[in-house]
Length: 378
Image 1 (cartoon, rainbow, N blue to C red):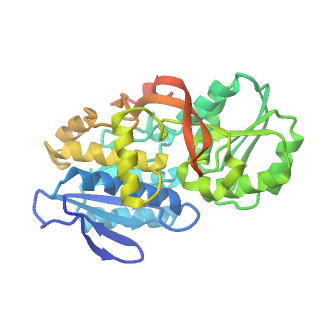
Image 2 (image 1 turned 90 degrees about the horizontal axis):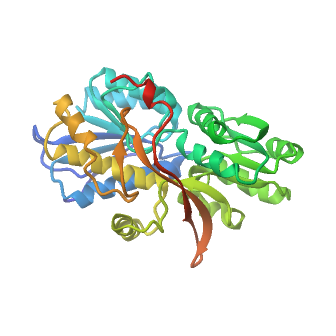
Image 3 (image 1 turned 90 degrees about the vertical axis):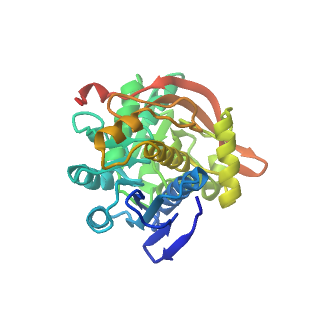
């Protein structure tokens, strides 16, 4: 595919244009490109567009708009994309509260939504839909892995996450597997920047470990303040608290921290090595989990598009379910609720030639699904 930029505005990138035709696949990407969560959305956008570029497809049009981390704006953009732009598939939302506002409306208008990240429990169980796919995980999954890991030597854990659907899912997932005592369970504000009160609670809790899910700018702020606090309580978290997009900003305070992920750059398979090399060459930085997930979401959509169109919903869904892609994660299949079944690893932040990144330490779960698939009746 010839990658061209048709127009930049404050909110919109139109990439991958070809001559418009009835067969052109229009994909609407709504993601977070401004504010404290922008790094997550930028990696999402860049991973997705890399896959489109590598595909060589000349009949794919990607419209990218910034939701500014506002659910009401995301709904407006989605409706415009569907009703005025005639997109066949929507994707890209980072935050679960935004996805919960958008996805039901998208599927009600008989359009596909393929999630690159957000994966709330409400859409994995009874609220599942044949037109909704998740190419990332289910929100609880990475946190479940750290609950299992904490069982090894942590008798009492303090757990903390933002007060929105993914935060609630995260602590639910951790508690599903952790068998020790919960010394404290705290929900912070989304976008919070000052964690002095929470850090004081951790120090006073008597916990021997703290599990913290704070993605994007929230995690940067917390870790910097925690490092200055002098607390000796060990911090751990999911990969989203210590993903590639935030490690540089956190700095040495992240070194050695154990977290969980379904991919890291040292995963030993050809697709992963190729992806890392291509992402580095294209963007001059290492990819994060968000970039990998978006890369795979694009691969899934493009694979289905080879044989059918989203307008033929049954055929397109069947093609998506085949998961006919070479994922950097390795083996990738869909569960009955159209969420991934995949391996989940313990990872550790290391210094690799002066660059902080995550390396896989060991596998915690093999072929791991989610707790809600049995509730999905499709």
